[in-house]
Length: 254
Ligand SMILES: NC(=O)c1ccc[n+]([C@@H]2O[C@H](COP(=O)([O-])OP(=O)(O)OC[C@H]3O[C@@H](n4cnc5c(N)ncnc54)[C@H](O)[C@@H]3O)[C@@H](O)[C@H]2O)c1
Image (cartoon, rainbow, N blue to C red; front, side):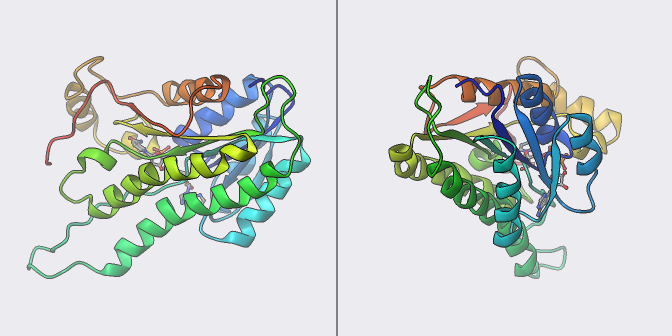
């Protein structure tokens, strides 16, 4: 699908994988709306890209609906990429053998899973009511972000793995449902990517993580994620699939 002049919405677009994606989409001629928390640098990043900033929390249906409406003003909304997410680790049991707070588990699942679902629903309603792209017949493409933790979650990742496993699991049923509207839905499951989240670690820890990747033995680059988003958008036969982007890493238990 050609996205020149089309509108694209990127959640979590103020940082990391989302920001790299917003840049690639803007380079491809799309008008980009960055949805991110009001406290983020989304306004500055959007201004750099000639796009707009929609301050919102992905878990809030009214805020996400407003962001989608804002994106749809810029042109036909064709691309929606969910990168908003958090990854605080928490084991089932703490050091004293007590269960860790369920509220922490719920918060993570709420942002990563319910937030992604919320974005899909609000965006699909608008895209389904739009005219298809005349060249491809597609109305739009939705790309979600899971993680390799969906398949090989580590100790301390029950909530994160559960949230990302569910993003993977809902990809096919949603792609099947939205097929009748000409909307494709795919998910990327990144490995260890060099984003602000990872750059906070000491260099030695980053190097050690990179060496665990079979090939290439380094962290993934945000632009490599963004490049895959562009391919998913362009390749009209990619649908209903979760694609690992991980240098063949399979995560160890810890
Ligand atoms: N970095 C990695 O190694 C890696 C690996 C696998 C999957 N992922 C996933 O990729 C996605 C992007 O991660 P990243 O590394 O770019 O992280 P990041 O922290 O750089 O960016 C995440 C963005 O999401 C925003 N965000 C958080 N909660 C939000 C909410 N409730 N509403 C709106 N925006 C919110 C943050 O403000 C931030 O700008 C996440 O879903 C993450 O789980 C990352």
